[in-house]
Image (cartoon, rainbow, N blue to C red; front, side, top):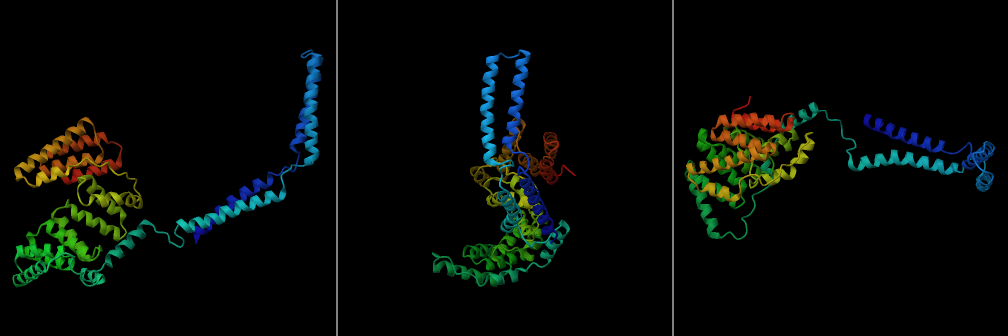
Length: 407
């Protein structure tokens, strides 16, 4: 209510000021034509004085008298037609003043009703964080989230009866041998291919339980992804726990970071989602599956987080051909290829420069390769290049911390 009182008072006050200016603009005193007559009479006097001093000749004085006399007759005719007072109508002035008040006050209220949020309460940062924490505490479990979706969907079109029979046989084998990791892996892929995400989630959950402490960050990230898919995009309490477990094992796990960003958006923490997605975007090749979605929404998320952010240009990461070539290599050859790409990136930054994301990528790459000295040297140089740019330094500091070369 306080907002409406203040906004209404400002709009009304502004309208009143404009209205008074319009009403006072009526020429209640001397009309413009009367002023012109006085000026012309003064000019006639100036002509006589100039003639007496010999400044102008008699014929020039006569010509000037005739011209000014003509102007006097025109001004006198205008004065007789318009009257002694100004010609601005009083009614028109009042109408225009009222129109200004209505447009400012009423138009402002209408515009706010269209694009604003009438009735929405003030949300200080502390209150928003408290509301987010309450939303986190009220998150549904995985079972509750899946129950909202309803029964499993039918098999996709084109799936043969023979394939369905094989999957059914695989289910029976896994049920008979619940500790068979390979069978569980096959079952996860088969159920997901059929669109039975709840069953795929259950099989992956069983696989993680079988592996226990040996379960990798990828195992937990896949479990979280299947949970989210089975819940129709909702990140449940159990899915969040799986994401946290993945990040405990690998703080840079990209899939886990991506879905954790979605979780933060769902609990109204765009600030935390932005930081996660910004770093992930600037570290990822353009071909990464999460990049298009991040690029589509991160600027709006940054605005909600109160951060000015511009998307980095595309086309700086490894190509799809590079990724495919690296996938088919033995570990030693793959490491050599990675070192080659890192060397090219380092050379380009040294000769041409680049955005903060490229520097962060290089620092992170050196950290992955175990070249701490090179990572530290790059971080030191980056601080000199981007001195005074707090946002750029924050991006690169995150990579430096990941590489172990910054506090």
